[in-house]
Length: 280
Ligand code: SAM
Image (cartoon, rainbow, N blue to C red; front, side):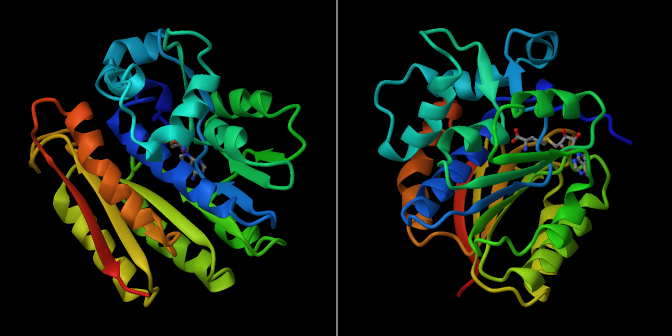
């Protein structure tokens, strides 16, 4: 079952949080000359037209990237992310939203490499097309979770692994934990960044408990909620779980989250959270 298309959601508040964290981790990895691998298990199509039928139908980006696009008091922590978004939008108008693989493509250096997988029959060819001329990248139509066994550890022994499934099937909440466990066994020093939606809080509590029970250490949780938790349909918050976060990430997000929340949620509902789930 592959009914999820990210084009309906591209640039929403959850993407803003996810891609901000992604870009800060990449910038931290770039502090050393040594190359690293960027592994994106659920890569999506890569580029999203915000005036396209899908994005227009939901209008989610209007309450996401559109709310910070024109701000002139951007905190420094947002610069790498916003520079990547600007690269795909020459001029004032916000037309395209770059997904995680294109943000990585923009920020990575010559010596770094990208490994991208996407299963959807419509999104995979779009993604492959985006990277046709990029010799740093390998794009495959393959199962993202399998990559955590097949592609780790990277030759460079440095890397960011972004795990961003659609959670269309409930088993994704368990699959992400066993996937991380598989990856961590092979590559314990890698940085793993897992995105999650808060639809039912119980699912996230359980996922975190399962993750703690793996015995993996050094786990940071970053969350931004636009509404209080609810048992009604719909996502009220989203977050990132980062294993082996760069040492500056917690302080950076502490600086940034209140600003981001105030811009993304002018009504002031919801909350932000930075929580060390398991210490080093
Ligand atoms: N990471 C992208 C970004 O930030 O721009 C968005 C990814 S979207 C949330 C999830 C994607 O995972 C969808 O495009 C879906 O087709 C794909 N997908 C679903 N199951 C998959 C699997 N087992 N392996 C790889 N991709 C999968």
